Amino acid sequence: MHERTRAEWRATRQRAAVLRALHACDTFVSAQALHAALTADGVTVGLTTVYRTLRLLEASGHVDVVRDSDGERLYRPRPDDGHRHYVVCRECGLSLAVDSEEVERWVARIARDIGFHAVDHTVELTGVCARCRPASGGRRDQWSSQ
Amino acid sequence: MHERTRAEWRATRQRAAVLRALHACDTFVSAQALHAALTADGVTVGLTTVYRTLRLLEASGHVDVVRDSDGERLYRPRPDDGHRHYVVCRECGLSLAVDSEEVERWVARIARDIGFHAVDHTVELTGVCARCRPASGGRRDQWSSQ
DNA sequence: CAGCATAAGACAACGGTTTTCATTTGCGGT
DNA sequence: ACCGCAAATGAAAACCGTTGTCTTATGCTG
Ligand SMILES: [Mn+2]
Ligand SMILES: [Mn+2]
Ligand SMILES: [Zn+2]
Ligand SMILES: [Zn+2]
Image: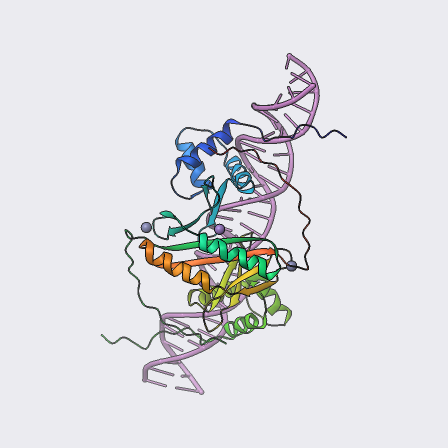
């Protein structure tokens, strides 16, 4: 009943490339953008492989994932000291990590109080950065709820 | 140069039905589930119309939206006194509103500090409720980041 | 170097959502 | 009441990010 040496993940040229490209980015990137960047660099990697690798990284906690308004998954390497939360500019995509200790404590307390197991949390802030001026118009309302 | 009386949204049978069905739910529901419920009730509404109406309600702030792990949008009428945050069971979908004053304050402070305009936030908690027991296994790691 | 399980890649399929476009309908004006 | 028309509906197709399929390639271990 020997448990053989763990079947580790193989180190392939493609995975290394995806990892490298991911770290070369300074913002959140989509799988497709990453694939495009790799292709532009002359690196041959299948889009499917990019997706698979990112999914692996996500599952193992090596990347932080965010979903844009269209539902597209955006990835960013997770700092070694744990996950972060970010505020992302809706116009240009600029992302800044924010200090979230307070939220982390709040999450922990809620999780403890409500009797749920394995509570996970998603905290995302979006806005318009200083560079991207707003130019919003007013909007009327109609539905007097219920 | 008269500005005519505002072109308001029309009151249609379909929109009323969607609104009614939405309020009849006590949890988050997807557009498709709502459509199915309406159909089951003998109400004739096109799925497209359900999507369009929900999008309208979302834009006007009358519903809270959440996205499940598959990226599906789930809707819930927003209480009159403002939005809420919820903890949702990953197994059965049970959702509980949580007290989020602390987070709201945190968000407000961050928004003030970072210099972004129109900061919006998404805070979602997921877990496994008391009824749905976990049965998790361990998982090995590999990627020594970088 | 052999053997084999894992990974890559091309392509099809999937699923939720949106678009298209022909038809219907609310609603304001007369 | 009746027009007239912009707005809304609905069936079907398009869309698009993502995942599955299946064949071929390739790490890795012995
Ligand atoms: Mn956190
Ligand atoms: Mn809030
Ligand atoms: Zn910006
Ligand atoms: Zn549950």
